[in-house]
Image (tube, rainbow, N blue to C red; front, top):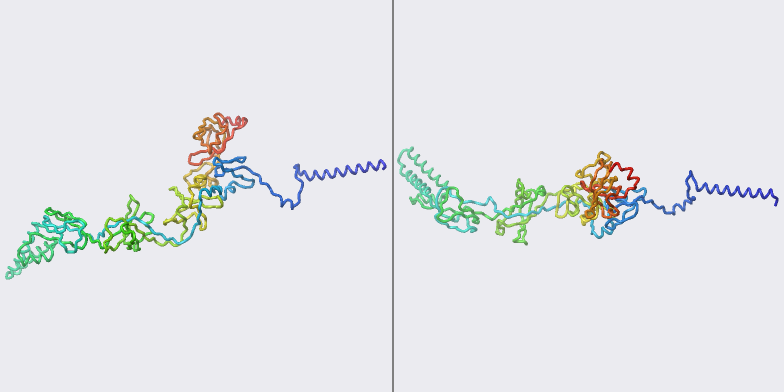
Length: 536
């Protein structure tokens, strides 16, 4: 081969190598960045893209994060939060959602039921007592002064018939009134031949004496017996005005009594009253005319039925109850005054209403909350407005929808296992108080649990109480100046490597009113410490 030809071949080879290398570099470098060799579309579809972990959050919903995987004090793994995924999405649906592992849910025995829409049938139950019918109670009280001469009935509780003699009395006034009446009647007969004016005067005297005797409850039979005999009777007999039972006896043989003094009380027990004490929240459901069922302890196998005749207009402040009267027939005499009874009063029809089981409601006294199951191991605390209550269900006026699943068992254990207090703070309850960073329309959308950051120097450590006193710098999110204060630690692991005098950077939250808790604390680099020395 000639020399010029060899040189030409070498030059061509170098040119080809240069062109190939340039093409390879061009595929590796674009705008100063080195890229991977291109792959086909099929390879891209088959490849699994690994998501980048931004940080790991506390599994109990606490605002405590970690750059590396770790466990909380209860042994639960921190949950990873990936790029493109907000922490609210990692928790569930909303920032207020509680997340508990499936294993914990099973151990706690969590049970859920659906919110139902149906007819509202309710019975109002109340404690009651048997009382005599006030309209069938009679008192026997002489209207003149006298003495008890003789007792025909001398035992309280004795059954008497209508017209049966109870006692006899002697009264000088009664004897005098009888004598006046006899003289007047005899004078009328004696003046039959006298002038009309004289006869009229004597008749008026006789009539006034007769009216006086009648006003003293002297019977017509006794009055008629006076005229034929022409002599007064020393005693007057008082008889029972009704058939019933002697419920009170004050008369003692030989005692003196004054006008109007009740000596006997007779009650007809053929009909009795049942006075039921209905609680204030149920009184609006009870109306007169409805039929009630009554049971007494003495006859557990019997149920008595009677009508609601009256709802009293007053409330007993001691028991917060309103008396409701039910009338019962007692012809057999089974019901005794003073007996205790249990009454079932039918409530007014309410139509169809939303309701949940009574056990689903967590009532703090100022607010009522139910836990809505959002998914496997995710629960949302939600404020509800309650209505009427039945035996085992509560009407819900606002806060839930038909078909939503509410926790009916172990909801208080969920409260203990999770940061429910922090979660429900995001529901906007006014009692939690505002912070400067939350004021205004934008702040109203923030969650109640906000993480604050600052740096400072450790002054004191109380390992037993899990508290630490730090002289910290300004806290812009709270508009706090530099000061020294005590913080609680979210768990004992934060005490590791912490000593008085150490300069740290830390994050903290307010779990309750004035309850400031450190969720993360790291030693501060010397340069950073010097840069912020003015805050100490």
